[in-house]
Image (cartoon, rainbow, N blue to C red; front, side):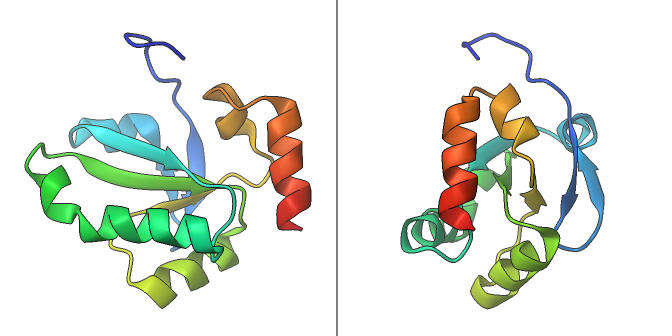
Length: 116
């Protein structure tokens, strides 16, 4: 994706079992998507906690934080509960959305095999 491109819509399930679409999220204001390879790994936990800890910075711009990984819903639930995340964590188990947003198939497969 390039600056100015329209973000492709998607539907993914969050850690609470609710289907979220980008278009519905955007109807409530700006959305900041961040992709992380695997829940509960050191680097990804640090990244996700940073989004949690900087909530006020995002609120100044009325921006919603949304995390996406290839983890299943149960793992997203555990990750969110363990760290008290107050934003959606979306499950993209096949890496389809990640690929749409610029992840190569090779990179997506690498993340999946590393995570398994």
